[in-house]
Image (cartoon, rainbow, N blue to C red; front, side, top):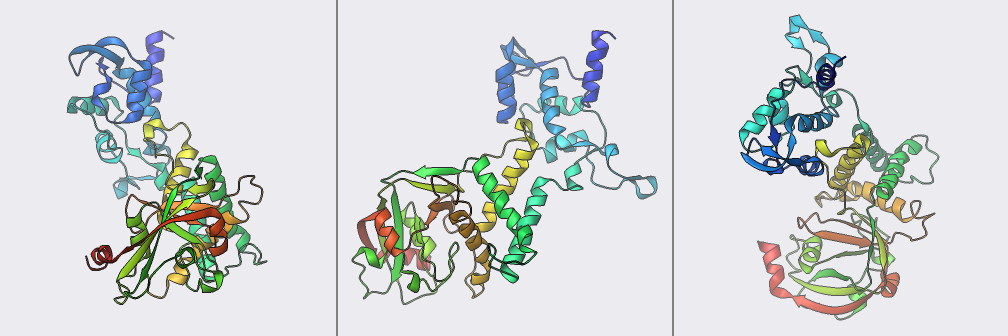
Length: 390
């Protein structure tokens, strides 16, 4: 078989044909993975879209790279989808090459001639997404997480000691989350000297003057459930700026407590934390080398959104908080069991102040004295009015 014939078959196997004999440079895409491919494979040549001598790759080589990414998620509907001519064709959602590139993958390129050449290089077949019809690892993990939430909220909260036969299956998702935390490297160290902020809302007469009044409460006074801790278990909730500390603390319905005092603490030693703000970036489909890892990252984003969503305090929050409380218990004890450097807290996206971070540390009032020092106490009578009555 001749080289030309062999090359034609290679392109055909990737559902490519009639690729224009053109070169393209890095200036035409905003996709980082495509630009990385061009940088790693360019040669000196003429860019047909810039009409200049630049560093370029052939459009044919680029299309092979693009199709490698597309084929991870899309394929010919004939490979897996039922077809019924009486029902109008394929029994599922299918796309033309143009719909695939512009509406589903949403590939951006300038000038539009680039998009036209890419679309025209792709075989005009019925493209479809198998993952819409068959479960992937993300779907499986989300099912496990939802099953866990149902069991833990409505059946049993003693997950680590109960003999209930349904609980080992529910526990699996926590073990998977633990594996993801380790695999995706979202454990980090908060260095000694890091500033942490706490806030206490109070009335005009109350004066906050010392450490005990604004640190984590004693366990016997932790009478209300919180996002990561049930009633009776004290933890040190904090933020990395005072605005977030206020927003995470204040009650807008308590008209008698119109004042807050903000405390600045400082960590006395390094703290090892799970940082749910440090998730790996979701790669474009053109940058995926490990499809399983891609779905694991997607699941972790979904998981973090779920555990940090706003909870309406309507009397039912004690139930809604239970899954995150058990996740915390898992990280604090089973996950920590064989770790040399024990996890002492969790950093998470603030549910009240977008793009800011909150933190919870596994310290009650006594342990917090060993972990942080109090730098300043600052009453804010005017500032609170803005937040309460905006």
